[in-house]
Image (cartoon, helix red, strand yellow):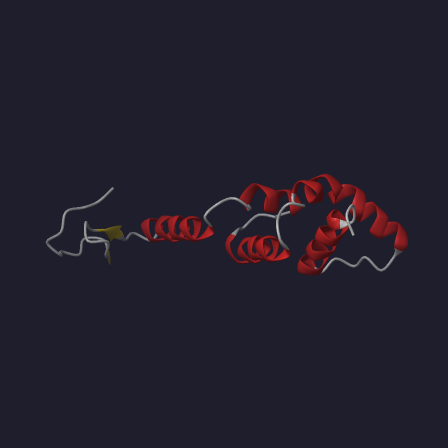
Length: 115
């Protein structure tokens, strides 16, 4: 099985992105385009890779690729999600007090504003 791991990773990616790889020539082209990124992901388990793919699918607003999975594989996804949510709350006009509560703009709570 050694030496085929990158193909397994490419197949995981194809399933996640719902790519049609039924045609042999298209499949070979798809493998060539994604081989380098897949080889770099070989040390990781399917579960780790799928977790990042699921997170990207739900949380980013750009066209993510297998290279994106490689960029995010070692990140703390829970922390990134919390940062993303915080940015969205700020954009919507909320602010966070020192006790970690979100408040609407101009709402009085007696807490100091946290940057």
